[in-house]
Amino acid sequence: MLNIFDSHSHSDNSPDGHHSVTYLCEQAVEKGLMGLCITDHCDIDIYKRDNFELRMINSNFEVRKAQLFFGDRLMLTAGIELGQPLFDPALAERALGLLNYDFVLGSVHVTRGWPDYYEVSYKGRPIEEVNAAMDAYFGEVLETAKKADFDSLAHLTYPIRYISGRDGIEVDLRRWDDLIDEILRTLIARGKGLELNVAGLHNGWGQLCPPKEIFARYRELGGEIVTLGSDSHLAQDLGVGIAEGMEVLQSCGFQYFAFYKKRQARMLGIR
Ligand SMILES: [Zn+2]
Ligand SMILES: [Zn+2]
Image: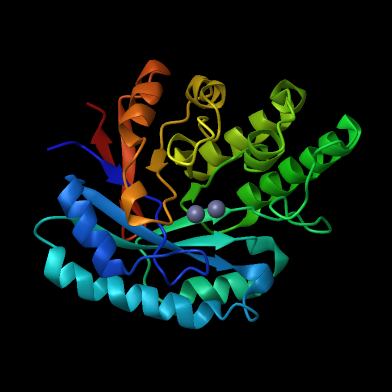
């Protein structure tokens, strides 16, 4: 049995998810995963528009029900990917208070005052514009790391997925070294984790998010809590890339990764 725990996955309770919780669990067991956390989206900036309250209730209920059926074969936990919590902190607090979560991913998909990276094409734009968008992004993440309630920070450097992965623009992240250091130090000081998002290993981009250098720096600064997630929106992507991700973590000096239950980090050996 592989020591694969996937802490980031989406069911059809996410607007962009495709498979039911039951089907995901069945496939996870089939693939030999040991642990799975369903972290359906809850984006605070579009909370009412996309009916996230009902989606969260359904997701949580389905996970609790699936635990009864798959519990002896899979460590299944109920999570949430809380996007843009600072757009409305009171609403974010309400969303987290609504249900019992095992794990909360803190995410920034959109920066306040900026369009969604997913919707903007950076192709042909001057590098100053790209840099300005990244300045704003890292600023938003730092604020989120300082103020929001979450367990692990999801996909740090997220816009790079689009700016480099989709639009083919090379971005030198060293420009933001100081800001990234401050984000990492904030996570460490608050006892929060950093996610290694391996979606790039199954969606064709081929890159880790954030890249290895950031994990090496996190370790250097004393960071210990790391979660791994496939960020799969399809059952076939569950667990894909986690083993490779663990190897990268090991090469950065990590011996453990975290899997959360009742919002407590359980440290498991990388092997
Ligand atoms: Zn996300
Ligand atoms: Zn996600």
